[in-house]
Amino acid sequence: MGVKIGDIIPPEAVEKTTLKGLGGRSIALDAYNMLYQFLSTIRGPDGRPLMDRRGRVTSHLSGLFFRTINLLEAGIKPVYVFDGRPPEMKRATIERRIEAREEARKLYERALSEGELEEARKYAQRAATLEEYMVESAIQLLEAMRVPYVKAPSEGEAQAAYMAARGDVFASGSQDMDSLLFGSPRLVRNLSIVGRRKLPGRNEYVEVEPEIIYLDKLLSSLGITREQLIDIGLFVGTDYSPQVRGIGPKTALRHIKQYGSIEKACQALGIRLEFDPAKVREIFLKPNVTSSYSVEWGEPDDRDVISLLCGEFDFSRERVQKALDELHKSLKQMRERTSLDAFLS
Image (tube, rainbow, N blue to C red; front, side, top):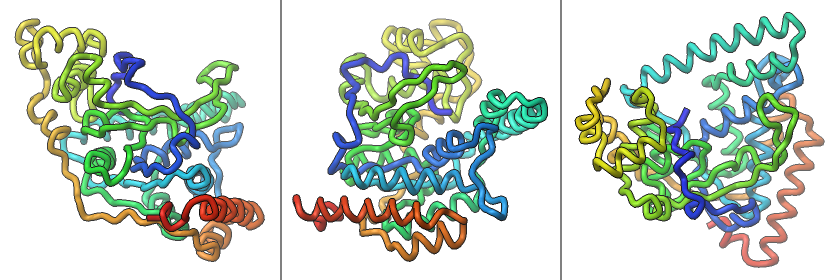
């Protein structure tokens, strides 16, 4: 879901960019966030995902493979961060997501049986589920491509934000704004959906490009602290707490600027909270993260990649090899222009 604070992000805190514009940067990517994007978007006209001959979903591998190659060819050094055990306070959110996906699955099957393909595809996207074998195969692919990954002890976005705050990577990468609440100095969005995209429910398309949101510029422009940004998130709803009824991000910003904190605002406004804001705030300020990780890149092992994608999951050998050849060509050009060793370090 992610915290819905997009409406108060000031334009001066956002820098539009391109994949090439991010060249030379290392980015800690929220792996689950990206894999869900691939599972939702890489589907046939009737909503069915890509599958191998044994019926295993492969949309996530297709997206991960080709998107990672695109990033590497642009000079971006990705690090994929996988979720660990979620905080106990996230249980209600997880249960709601499971229920919503089950309901979407039923609506998908009904639309499909009635021949409503556009509706079916819409519901299929909402029903996308990331299963354990998908995560395992994604990690196997990253190992074959010699792309680093980190297994977070808890929330992947928190771990990515921690790595960015330490300076081990340039930024965290996710579609969700939670990374800012977790303290990432820079958040890169749209890395998994760059290109021409259809607007939901409309026969219109837009060009989607990456953007960087700078936390310091955001806070300075709004005239608030990070703790107050978290409190705005608490007003509009987080993965660990429900939305305060009737309060959106703009109203939340106004209340926080007037009263200073969600506790003082609620006391003044006569609002009774259904959660302990101090406990939720603590998740963002002191998340469970690890400093035990390595971020080292290498050239893909073609044999391992082909063995996994083509031998195990029925990908087209010709298409996979062509993509790998293009990547090796790009890496060679980088070596000639500067130093591949410097890029991979």
